[in-house]
Amino acid sequence: LSVGRSFCACVSLVALCSGLGCVSMPTGASLGRAEPATKSVPRGAWLAPVVISDPSARGATENQRQLTLAIEGYVQQAGYFSRVNLLPGEPSSDEYVLGFVFDRYELRREIHPMYVPLALITLGIYIWAGGPIYRDVTHFSASLSVADTSGKELLRYADHVDDEGNVSLWSPRYALPTSSAERTRLVRSLLEQAAYGLTAHATQ
Amino acid sequence: LYARALVTLLLALVSVACASFRSGGAPPTSPWPPAPAAARKSISMILASGGSEVNGKTVDTPPRVVANWREWTEATYRDSALFSALVDPSVPSDLRSEVRVVDTGEAKIGMAIACGVTLFLFPAKATDHLTLRTDFKNAKGEVLATIEKSESVNTWIELFLVVVMPFHWPKSEIRDLITELNRATLAEAHAKGII
Image (cartoon, rainbow over all chains, first blue to last red; front, side):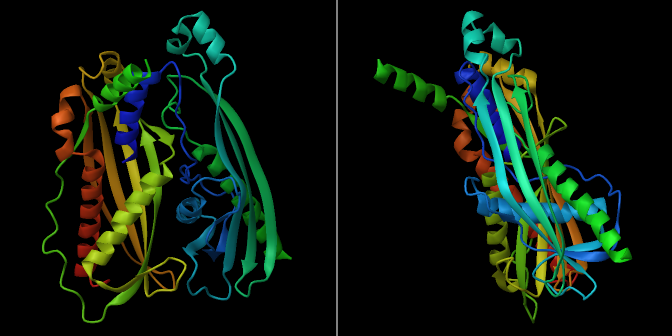
């Protein structure tokens, strides 16, 4: 139960330590809603289990499973391939195998440098007025390899998304930190490159 | 001084009384477990968040929450005795089920602030609407069936709910809900002859 329990935590935190700001949660694995692909490949694809190789990533094993299914759903909804499935399975000879590796997978929450001095000077009014309390910093870096069913790599792309944003007491991210948008941006960027690359590769 | 601070903190923590109540929804699946098929198949199950929203804003579902959903779902699959084996998703199997849980939440922010400011005398409320969507596929990746089940849970926070809390612990309520949605899904798939 994410909303109910997080809501309990949120109310408790507002009551007990709104002046301290001590919320921290591990990076999740969900993706946002899929936008339609700008280029579709008229063949099927099979997705290998996603790998998170970042040694500092918390909960990497659990996130790998979740991200695998999340990416499969995203590819299906966006329509990058005629169909998509998870390995292991029985791909046909004209289908592709996709492999995602995330070598950086980080959402870090820092105290905003103005928070402590301004909250003290204004006797807490700064917090209730919506002044920045935290700064959420995200770093995602990943590669996508596309191979044929014999295992021969056809294409490989790498990309990264680095972002940061302020969080106030009234931000939706205050009690429920999220990096879903950044993750989605990175996955989409890699898929777009792969779709265009495969189209060009097929015409050669 | 430290003892007083500790006691104050403990009292404050104890006073955070949350209790959850399922919305009712469909009646419990009966009979459970269903009568098994003559030839049972192996299955692998993979589960992920299909997205979480709070008041229309997308948020990350904490990985430990999804891990709980997965454990409860695995327990229901084993309990069903409908399969010859429940194998890891990395191992080939006769069937695969892909389970996505969508959590659409609503939190009353005004009530939450009033609740915090009045030290839990004024109640606060949040609602989780959980939808469990299961795709059953064969080894070739062909979709055999897609089954969707959903139900809601209301979570209340109020000082005097501390007496109700042991009987409506939020985690227990959501475990029962996920279990029931999985039971209903498996029973329907069984009735359709897929498993």
